[in-house]
Length: 345
Image (cartoon, rainbow, N blue to C red; front, top):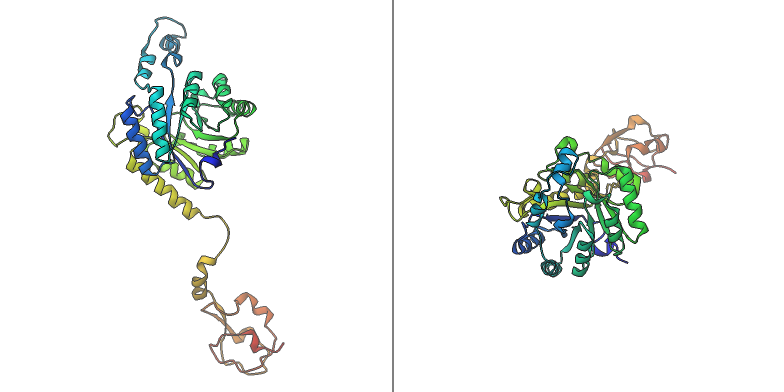
């Protein structure tokens, strides 16, 4: 049985470069994008695999516009035909990825595409937001016994719950939910990053972030919330024309994202209250008990004899009450550090 911990190092952030359709159906471009993603520091590359004949009814337009089957059209199918890669090309892309030590996987949109991906040896499946309610596809994916990353855009809590239950019941060993808003690009007011916590609380599953906004700020905010899995659309260069160009990062921008998240994780720390890194500063900045005036031998100590001063290498001020009333066993000069051995037991 394969789990995400077997694929990605635990505790470390995972960056998925969503190539999707951005290769424009060109195998060489897809190869270049995998290579560039690896150079940028991505942990994985993700594609989309489908048969255009199974994607849309020929009556899609008339059903959307009029609610009835009127004039048939192949516009939607023709659009998706531009982005087809062959089974042999997928196998080569998987081999290339393995050689670069970057994980290769895809979102299948039909049963035959799951079979194709099985032949490539993919170790992970991605369920796109559009397929959360497609229980026939989910059951097919679950029976592979591979871990699943599932986006949750356009889905209600009940729909997500049904999908999670179905996957678990049919053999999926490990599930990561991805907060996702299916708007391209997603405006800030629709981002709703607190939904990450809602998903965690309701399903007790690791929750990542599939980002459809422009730039890197949303991912950085998600990192500050504790997210470890990030998915972001990827393009081979800044000016490349592709379907998701408005929400995609170039290799240089993807590296900036990784560096930013790394910095955020560093400054977040563990949450433990521990001043070990500040010990030297504490010595210089904190106060200790010092003699305010010359204190003669045999005198019972009072507050008037004491003044808090730096450095903080002696008795802390909050321990003064333990010394009040005790008699000195020697003279203590003005501005000398007060030490416990200066008092009669």
